[in-house]
Length: 156
Image (cartoon, rainbow, N blue to C red):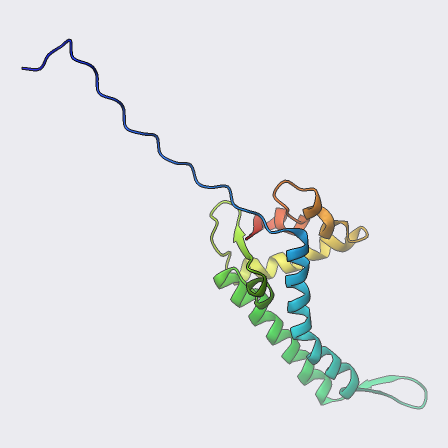
């Protein structure tokens, strides 16, 4: 028989809430983008220099090299920014700077399709004087307009 006048036991300790993620700074995001752009730039430069010419009238023409280098640029961009970033949350530039692209609700990588849609949504960031790209400077979650559209954040 238990003593009805004994001290009551303490309740179980409360669990911990999930830690608030450390959002990547604007300069980290810009640096990662520049690294990604530098990786693709040689293909675009080769397409513009080797793959184009103009005739005597100044009309531009394109040869097979132009199309080869453009396809290579899109393939490298697609692998790096859409497939790789969608699968791991990190493009080569983000990996170099130690930041990741994740879903806002899940904190997990977003997949290639959503990474592609996010890059398309960046067009909206640039519509009004590129102001959308400056949003991370004052936004609480350091999101661009494209991040808000596809519900993503960039974290450290």
